[in-house]
Length: 267
Image 1 (tube, rainbow, N blue to C red):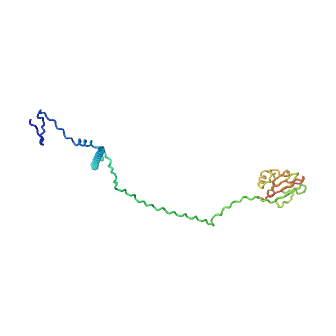
Image 2 (image 1 turned 90 degrees about the vertical axis):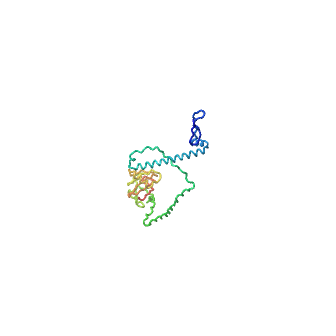
């Protein structure tokens, strides 16, 4: 059998001339993928990482371009006749890749912030002068109230009550006092002093003040006569409502009593 020759000029027989059996086909030359794999395997890790990054960027760009084409094709279809608006949109199987972020250009200087103009602070107003009070309309100052004056003594002295005469007492509204048959204070019996208007024994050892006598006479009402001894004190009232006090200084006999008397002016 005559061996077949390829039209390209090669003289590779299809069968073995000795045995007449067909020859096995020659191994095919390695393809691009095999050559790339062999080349990739010989590179270091830096080159491999660069190749992977480049391939990822290319794949992301292809996916983004496909998504843009899909949006452009679907958009006009939805606008024509409103049919697409009524039909539910088909499920999208395309996932958009994140937008590629580019580093900022280091040569571009950042824009300066707009200038701020400080508004001038308002000028503080001077304080308004305090108006001076009008002397004609200003109220007069309040004067302190003085304390009540001490009661003034109208008369002070010594008298003797005489029970042996027709005039046994004294009037103490006049200055000096005057003798009277009874008067404001009189002797009525042995060691007994009579006060027709008001009379009361003073229990203290010191001589009373006018206010103390007023309180005593307003609370000790009753018998207008007192049995007295030397050293006793008493308060009495006159016909004209003056207040007085006396102390028994001596009782020389049953008909005479000596008194030290003080009479105050009225309120």
